[in-house]
Amino acid sequence: MNSQERQEETAYDVAVIGAGTAGIPAAIAAAQGGARVLLVEKDSLIGGTLHVTGGHMAAAGTRRQSSRGIEDSVEQHLADIRRISQGTARDDLIQIQVANAADTVDWLDERGFAFAPETPRIVYGHEPYTVARTYYGKDEGQSILEVLRAELEKARESHDLTLWTSTPALEIRKDDTGRVCGVSVFKNGQEVDVDAPSVVIATGGFGADSELFEELEGAPLVSASGRAATGDGIHLGRAAGAGLQGQGTYLPTFGGLPDPKTPGRANWSDRQRLTSERPPLEIYVNTDGKRWVAEDEPSIDEKERALTTIPQRTFWTVFDDAMLEASTGALEMVVGCEPDQVRAMANNRVGVHRADDLSELAALAGIDPEGLVSTVARYNDQVARGVDEDFGRTHLPMPIEKGPYYAIRNHAITLVTFTGLDIDTDFTVRSAAGERIEGLYAVGEVIGAGATCGNSFCSGMLVTPALTFGRLLGERLSAGATASRSS
Image (cartoon, rainbow, N blue to C red):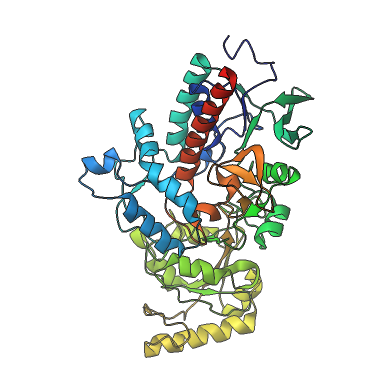
């Protein structure tokens, strides 16, 4: 009996909530192993964050590395993660991830994954690895989704896998003993109770829920996350007694321009260039008009940590027209924008301001005027003397001295969320007391980026664990389902 014939059945071996980076491979692996699987997705489309992510993956010892003469090992990868995260990631989980990551990347490779031709490479947007082991597709996350979608269709045709879209999960169901026994979903206008001894939460993060973000990460939310990332899995898990992990590891992504149409959102692709991409001419000031970091600090992680200390985690880049004129070609200040394009945005786009004097600029931008004027005067004096006595900036090419002047508002932005459901090394969800909630599992961003990245952004340690843990969990649950059926 194929999945089309049993769409309305409500008894399964495994129910997976969320058809995204972790949920799809979990459902595929479970079905291929012989389990009866239901995959439910609240959106009308599958893929989750794969529609918006760059899809960076990291693995040591892949066939692609070998073919390019790159020597790497699990031990080197682990050492890099521990160094970059400063030991704040969960070592038990990263060991599982790194040991199985090459299999995941090779699995995609075998199925025609469209690697970007320059990969694997070292990525410098955050603290870099010591070896080229970061991979992504020519169409970023969509390249991963292309493979997963094809594999999902094969599994639906050849195995016992049912997909319900536009079907949000409502509640994790438990039996009289407290063991998980299924999930309630909302399908075709009515609540449906699904029976399943194994339920997998793979719903992603909560970067689109400002209230939950404020509660769990303790910071104002300016989001570049997918709009469906509303924390459904966190709510489902906590209602079922789940504890949390990753508290205190939150780190924002450095600086995104405010979305011109939607308050509280920013666009990562629509941002100012990082120090790793160009030496900065401008200065950064907070709401008081004061500098708060060396603008040429090479470590983006250090800048992100400094950003968490300033009011509203909001800052402005301030510069004059001479600086803007010099920001062209590879030295452009805003991604994809030549000087005249930035000039055209000024006083027309939200967060981009221009004025003939600094006090007027500050008033337009919402910066303390006296603070900005005094800061620019002090900075110009330090440029003239060639010494930044405040923060140790060494790149001091020119003063900010002749209008028009510009200020571009930037926010600490959220791409991923760091707090998530606590799990053990079998991916079983644990209570706040550390006890296993039998029958309930979690993989993907719902376990929090802090689990595999700690208090850092570690290349490939979000997408790859989602894919890897999803596959491993699906295989394990299928083995348990078939063993139970045969006993």
